[in-house]
Length: 206
Length: 222
Image 1 (tube, each protein chain N blue to C red):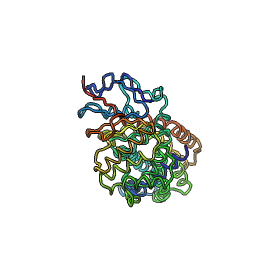
Image 2 (image 1 turned 135 degrees about the horizontal axis):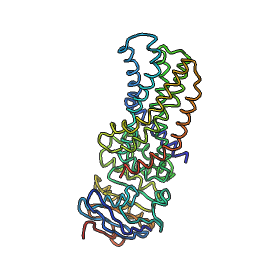
Image 3 (image 1 turned 45 degrees about the horizontal axis):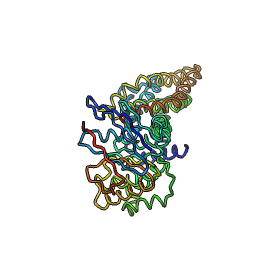
Image 4 (image 1 turned 120 degrees about the vertical axis):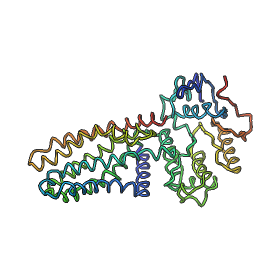
């Protein structure tokens, strides 16, 4: 369970988050809405542990994430604006490193299967810098298939994806929630998910 | 624990092999600087012999300074650094693997080329060997200390200049003891003291800098 309590965040002299609190339970998805510059990315980076809030706590299974960094990061999968894919490495080499970083310990065959599922079969040995933007993003999305993380934090995951990939990603999120996973995401599109599990917050409203 | 060290080390070396120009630039820079001096100060053998060790050390130091900016910036730009920071493994260990790879691709080639440069300056074989030994202990210290500067200036405009300002004062003791060891060896003095100090610097840098770099990266990525 992820609990966020009394979160404040200042960037420069702007107050982005003003005592934000919410709880995310297994099987739930939180859709973070807000205008550009409302602090969506900042909120997601705070939850991922990449940004320190000005005040407030992020609790994972009841304990502050700062005090259990490595355990928490083992349960977390964060995909930001940057894909985290190395251009000078081939797709499969990228996945091998992600496999180790995520501590996923999946087999080579499963990595190949992940690439295939995301429509990248035949591109295994191609350098990521030679891929299109959407394909590049798909290599990053392979992490969703590889990781066993309970909490997914996805910043604009539908960007640069075609209709088919959007459907695929929505399906992956749905399966993750059904298994008792949790997810936070920001997107300006309508979330193509069954609504009963989805809750929403909107940032930047007083 | 070891698996992640091994994976990151292999990744960095692979990337190094695919960007040969970046790696070779450091080596060429050192060789060019060391080769220009005799042309500028004149081919006086006695003069070159006394200046040789100092010049080679300065050239090696500047060359490793030049390569520092690349240490984290590429990973920062494509987001792979973010994924390392939020991986389940200790960041200090990942950082240590990156620094070891950095030394293997920049420091070690300098160490290997140094006997040739020593020959160019007419150093005695024995003094040349002392030079190689000081560089072998000294260049890893430069990589480790430099990584702290690279992490602190990550994402800043003009980061390269700032790195130099930050780490040059830290590099100076290494330079002094490294070059002095060769001079004293040539003068027939005892050089154990210099090596003990260089060794002590290397051990402290090995133990302390990975943690410092990890903390600096967490701050820089905000």
